[in-house]
Length: 278
Image (cartoon, rainbow, N blue to C red; front, side):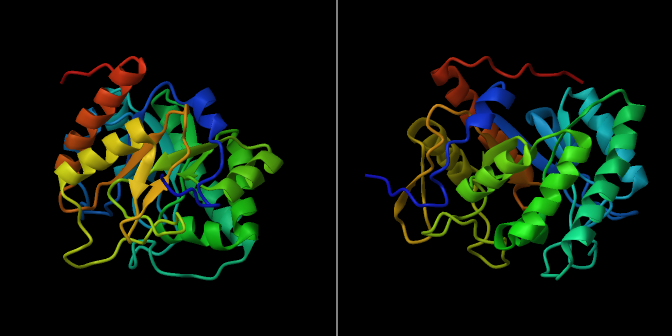
């Protein structure tokens, strides 16, 4: 029997209200100036929602505008992807900030992206914190509440990993909470995400990602770093799969995950996302 941890024991009921089906989201627009990060143009046709960097850990006005227009071309919904203001560390180094400073950063970065969305006639769909900000939120409830207060300004949900405590605090703050699954990262025995690290064991193959997504969607479980099967407890709630565009196999990861997501949606009676041609 799959092990159920306290971290993963929430209900993810907001997913049922918000998500039209099982979906894929991907971090996008994470370059800066002339430097490009992931293959955004190639990935965009395969995903449902794009988490667009908005000037903190990555991104700039030109890249934000181009990425928003690319999302519009492929009918992809957009959320902001605010991060710590640390481009040198790509938002993955630990910083200590006051909750008010975190609130200001999320409002500032999301507001910048929202301007480009409005210019293209698109809505802001959610806020999804990036990298170390994600882990900071999980360590510190004051930081968590600061991000949720920022989301209330824009009247949108927050998107993050499955987390019972986060779900409860979001409900207290009156913010909807989309909970997602991460097939290109690993889960600890406690149900926590393991940070992206360098080295030969950091990168999962596209084939393994496809298998991991299928297992999560059809069996509601994932294997942790100690080869123990964990119960994800999404149950009847659909979820969105997060993939990282800065992974070496990013494009193939998304393609193989798309096959798995479509198979899950077919098996569970959801409509498939309509492909958008060039």
